[in-house]
Amino acid sequence: MNMQLSNLIDAKAVVPSLKVTSKKQALQELSQVAAKVTGLAPRDIFETLLQRERLGSTGLGQGIAIPHGKLPELNTLYGIFARLDAPIEFDAMDNQPVDLIFMLLAPETAGADHLKALARVSRLLRDVDTAEKLRGSNDGAALYAILTEPAASHAA
Image 1 (tube, rainbow, N blue to C red):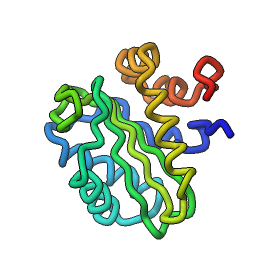
Image 2: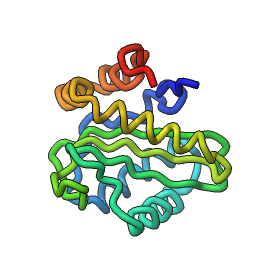
Image 3: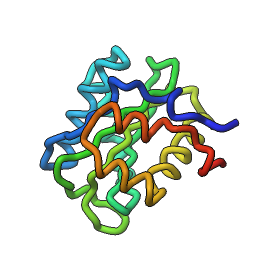
């Protein structure tokens, strides 16, 4: 199955120009956005993300991070995307600061879907052209379009 990002992310879940100065602040801000989209408490989301980061940074390198976590109250996967106003330190694998963050929240029971979604997002953001387009726009609708355009050229 080819997981489309349009099933994961809502246009309201795109933050075109997030002004944060630290990883913790970025996760807090994105937890607030996620709370609006999911109806869960921002604190629960933030705690889940922090727990995951303690296991190892979700900064993949190339300026990209995919913080993620599982929450028992969810019944579907949610994505939240932010383009940062200025890159921040994220303890990424390549020690480069991060300016593109795609947060993924999954139900406890998501299993393989969670991993598929992570792989899909990772592939999309690591695509040099896509990353360049995302960095080049601070318009929410344009960013949403870039994230959700059919993955013909990046078919799994």
